[in-house]
Figure 1 (cartoon, one colour):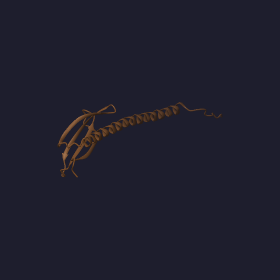
Figure 2 (figure 1 turned 60 degrees about the horizontal axis):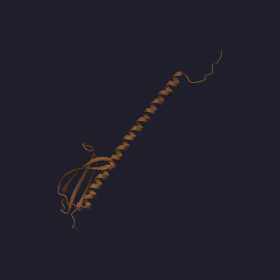
Figure 3 (figure 1 turned 90 degrees about the vertical axis):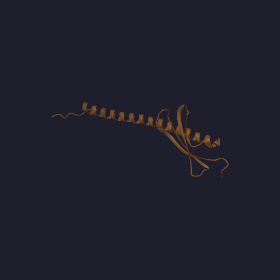
Figure 4 (figure 1 turned 120 degrees about the vertical axis):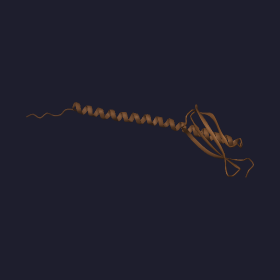
Length: 125
């Protein structure tokens, strides 16, 4: 009897290898797309945080003493339009006001950033 030497892969082995490779490439592509989406969300959150910080810094710089209540407005940061909502409330200490600023995309309920700060009345110690 003659012994046949195997000289390569069978068709089934090649098809299995291609199927494994296709699954691995699809998973890598999906992970890459998810990372890109996550990166865009982080960028938007960073910009929204800056809008909130800028709003609080503006109130502090103007030495404003806002009345309790809610105000809204819009700001643009790095080409991204954002809507802010500022809620001013009194504190037990009459020399301070509590300011809560939340920022999101206009027309969306999802908030990208929220910042809470306090303002001191000018001239109080």
